[in-house]
Image (cartoon, rainbow, N blue to C red; front, side, top):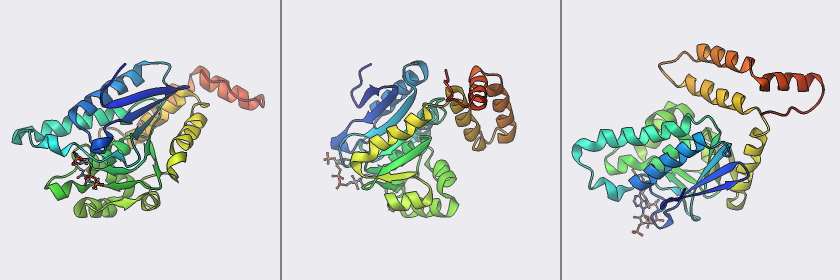
Length: 257
Ligand code: COA
């Protein structure tokens, strides 16, 4: 599959999706969003792909936000649908049954921070900067940022970041729980792969149910505990559960399908 604004490369079973508009700090225009949507469809379908890393091209930015230049041509009454479209694509990232992590290699602003937050978890390079600067444009976050930032770092800090538009650095992001690890730029992708390679030794069906159950916590339509019991029930009858429990009792490593 060939794209014009993103690059994909499959390394073993890990698909690296690189947002590739470095001259515009990888800003998310409609083409990027459409291509990201297509790439995620591929991730859902292609059995060779078992995990995903999303990152940005160049040394400066992960994604510096929605493409501000494009906003000029969007009609006044098209804002809500623009937001919904971005939200739907990011839901596809968030609900992906395979692990998706963000390797944040520079500015993650506005839609960039929102994209990183839609991933299952985040690693940052030492030069990463996070922010929701929409307020500087007379806007608010529209691709899930008001919700996911609040979930991830709590109401007070989220309010402050969105109201001031100020950026935070990678270490502050780690302290706040926005990222799990801070790595040198060279080590960002290797560390991301190292973690995914641990996850890939586990039962894929169990991993997909963990994603579903944890996401249920944030879904106001669902009772997370009921979802957990349902999903626990679903994994309980799998071959992977039989293999995992048998391997433990036989003191050997499990081989999951
Ligand atoms: N949309 C469109 N273009 C963007 C962009 C965005 N969100 N962010 C950066 N760019 C473009 C710049 O316009 C510039 O293009 P040009 O060279 O054709 O003029 C190029 O990327 C480089 O950006 P520049 O601003 O020159 O880099 P910098 O190092 O001086 O500043 C930032 C970096 C990230 C602080 C600055 O680009 C910025 O504030 N970007 C907007 C962030 C934002 O508000 N995001 C939320 C959008 S809703």
